[in-house]
Length: 325
Ligand code: UDP
Image (cartoon, rainbow, N blue to C red; front, side):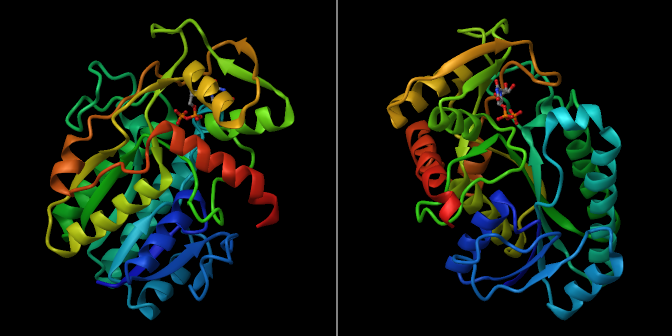
């Protein structure tokens, strides 16, 4: 089970996972709209530049590469954009995943690890959130992840495709090599925005300080991208050894408010933040915090790199070097 197709492998979490796959002796092949940016680290990895909507190219890639497992990162990820343009999210996330699954059925590929999201829970009733909590997304982004999880369940029943859906909480941080890290355009995620603002003495916009939380700002569970990458390796192994299909939360199990993140970032960077409080961003739940008992006990995963200081420190180290990579 060494030949792994990594759809969306050129992106942030994908490239960290490709690095870990290589370290663990796998043979990853990338399928992405873009070439990987991190050529220094991901050498000698074949990358097919294409779209998941291109069935013929996808099928050829899977057959030629003798693919045995798929890791599927390719998808749009912005809550705000999904509210403004739901059609993009249904098209790219749901329709293209359907295409991928049809292709897997045709090529007899039986295992898939899918990038799901804590957004499937919507506004959870109980914190920390367990995987069997009510799934009730409150934005189109979360709806598409939920729809795909359901689709995976039906494809298992009909065609025997087994899956692990990893429900990411807030991925952040960068590889300790300093050679890969987060580079979204435009950047919408809190930690890189805060660090960039501190670096350039720009104002940080905090979306809402009237939530029902300890300081009025939203609480999130930040998980280091290297830990997240390792969760994919464990999920691949789980499926290869005949493990059952299921969804796992992947977070650190610890929550931080936006104000706390800014304050820790000030300490790490030794700079002072300028903050403006804005109205709430549509589609934001007040608290997202993972119960990680299932993945730690069943897959023996640990969030060993996910202290908030390490997350922010590695993100800061990356930000200072990324223009040179
Ligand atoms: N956020 C913010 N200012 C920003 C970017 C994000 O206040 O410039 C808030 C956002 O509204 C949310 C939290 O930070 O409450 C985390 O947002 P992010 O987009 O990083 O991740 P999400 O939880 O939406 O996946």
